[in-house]
Every structure is written in C-alpha cells, then in structure tokens.
Length: 264
Image (cartoon, rainbow, N blue to C red):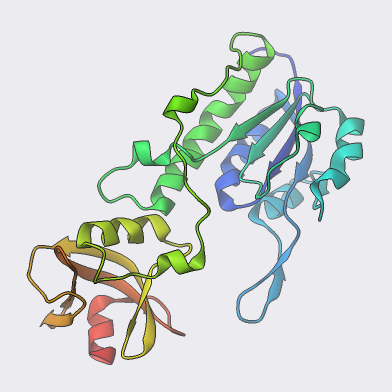
C-alpha cells in the first residue's frame, strides 16, 4: 500500500457498517474526518433514545459526528472538509449526487445486494450480513488505495445482471400456510429474520417463527400437529414446516419444546 494518506468521510448507521469504519480508523494510511449517521431513535417498549452503532464507535474514537435530519444539511461541512473519499455503508437514505461529487475521488458504496450469491445451505440474513461486513472491511482500504493511485477504475453497472427487490414491509412477514409451500416459507424465515420477521397466529396469539426446517411428513394444509414431545409441524400445500425457535407475542424467543409445554 502507498504511503499517501487519504482522508475519508464515512456515512453508515447499523452494526453492518462498523467493521468498515473500524478498518479505516485502524489503518495509518487513512484519516476519518467525519462520520455521518442517522439521528438517535427511540428503541424498545420504553422508547429509550438510542445512538446508532456507528455513532457509538465513532464517539469512542473521538471522531467528528454529524446526524442530519436532512442529508443536504451537511453539504457545507463536506465542502469544508474536502475529503478524498465518501464511504457509504448502509447509511439508511439515498444520498444526492451533489454530495457524492464533492470528494476528490467521489463516493464508494459497500452494499449487500450480492448476498444471495454467497449463501450456504443454512445461512440467514444475519449470518450472510456478518460475513460480508467482515470481508468488505478487509478489502476496503486496499481498494481505496488502488483507486486513488489509478490502478483500478470505476465502470458502469451491467444492468442486464442487476437484480431488483421491492421495498419490504412488516406485513410481508405474515406466513400463509395455505398458499405457500414449506420450502418457500423456510427460506422466507431465513431471509426475513430479524426484520421484518415471519409470523403467524395460533389460538389467536401472534407467533414469530425465528428458525424452521422442512419435512416431507404429510399434514393437512394449515393444520398444527404435535408430532412428539419436542416437535410439531404445520402443513402447507407442499411439505411441512417444523418450527425450531419461536417467539410468542410479548415473550422472549424459546425452543420449540418449551413452546409445546406452554402453548400446545
């Protein structure tokens, strides 16, 4: 890596972004001049005002932090700092072009859009995101250095290879055992955990299913059937869903055998 010290502004919010920020802070060839993150938000039942993971990390390292309600509010500060790069990692909002063009080398975005290509059999969104957040942080400093030296150049995205996902809402987590098959439901659970979470209703109570597997056992579509003291299945139009970890409304997550004892 060259000895040229590069300055960066970093925009990010969740834990996913922390390894990338940490990699730049720990590397002597980079100076993080500013961190941009979402405003503190109320969290939990008591609505405790909580800082983002990126703000917590930046605060511990005495980095200048901005939390704009409107993203263009930081334009003047960005111009003043004049960073070499703007690094964007899961900031939470689309950044306007007039911000992206201020840094000398422009903006670099670390994004999880390719996650499905790297999944293994039992991966969930959380396990995939953790892998990518660590791997991207490992390569980020070298990529920025190579870009600054002209060893690599940006090129337009191949739109023919792009994939599209509409915005996901909380209602997308509702499981319909009568119209969806078991394989699709289990994949949905893996993709939608922790957010928006997959849920159904049993005895008029909302039940989140956090982990499940597929069985070929025949159970009537939509029926909940106790298989043994530690297992129950829910029939679908093709195959059976075997919940492994569930969370009844107002309760903590529990293993399926504990759910059986208290609710079946």
